[in-house]
View: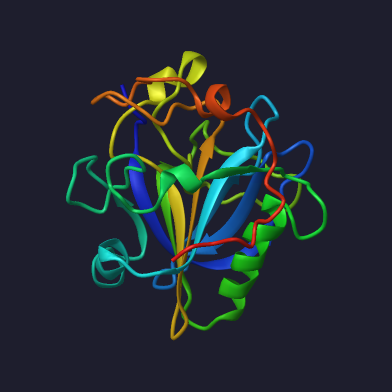
Length: 237
């Protein structure tokens, strides 16, 4: 099986809403700069069982994918086919970043050392930068969808995207979401300043998978335990 509606949302940031104890997602309110259509982007900062999310930040990205993103997809939601040599992301097969460098980070660690702060910094910068664009990969929804994530504050756009994390290597409850070339992520282009990319996964996921995305080895947690990284500003090109 796989996630039902894999795609890419291209939009501009309007507002950032921090995750809370009752809402484990940082939520971005965004809009299509061409049509004004509003969207929500829901980014996990804590897993369902309360454990820290694994993250990797690329602060000065420049690769084949970033080149394609600037010249290819239209604004709004773009359905994607889960195949190689396309815009689809696969953490384990695409060579986009060093997956072995992913580390856990809590939702609320010491000041400036948590995912809320890390993500909020990039989103506020995008809001303040003329022409900045968000490229959010994950599972999109188009209104009336039970995948909407209600937040503690503000109105919720009916359309948006979530599952902005690795979508393979799951066991148990989320095994049905497994697939290849359907991973999520958030990439931001700041005109004249370059790219930032954020990739997320869960400690319960395996980083070796079969051709169908099912676990082919132990989970990250089984291999490494659950220590929290307190240096989120570490990034690689």
